Image (tube, one colour):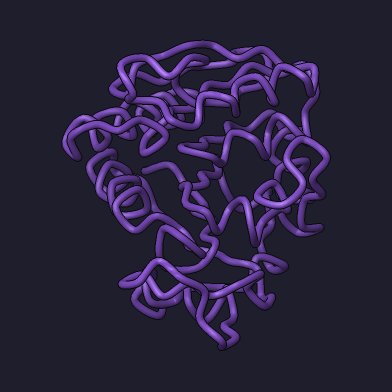
Length: 225
């Protein structure tokens, strides 16, 4: 029987929701791993809406659950309904929606607050010693909720201009967590906390390398489950 995995989305689109390629890559690797997946998102208003063609704010309002339903092909549930007891693992793709809608990292950095249902979901899986997979910017959720944990967002220096958001590693360290430097096609496993992270689009890399890195994260999560 395949592992039961919950996938948590933050909207649809890199600048104000979940990163579509990351969500898709996670779903492909989960499918390949024989997992049974259910998709969730919080039923809240987005912090903002971005015109992805122009890269500028749009004067409209959108709902995170409704937008995430685009990625889920309509098969999605309110995050408030997620029960950790019904799953073996949980995975969070990245995208600015994580830093805007699932928490306030985009505005407040390490002083951010985490959405109540996101926090309770993370706490429930952690308490049950079930693995948590995070990619791109979403490892900051673990860094905020679980002081002392180990995560990666890639490198802590902007190596060859490939890691423009390397300062995120410093903020993670300031939260009392350990940042582990990894390449884009690698993931890090915090065995004590069962947290698996990979940098994905925190690195400027070819899409197939990002896809492969997410694959290592998914594989490690399924091994731990």
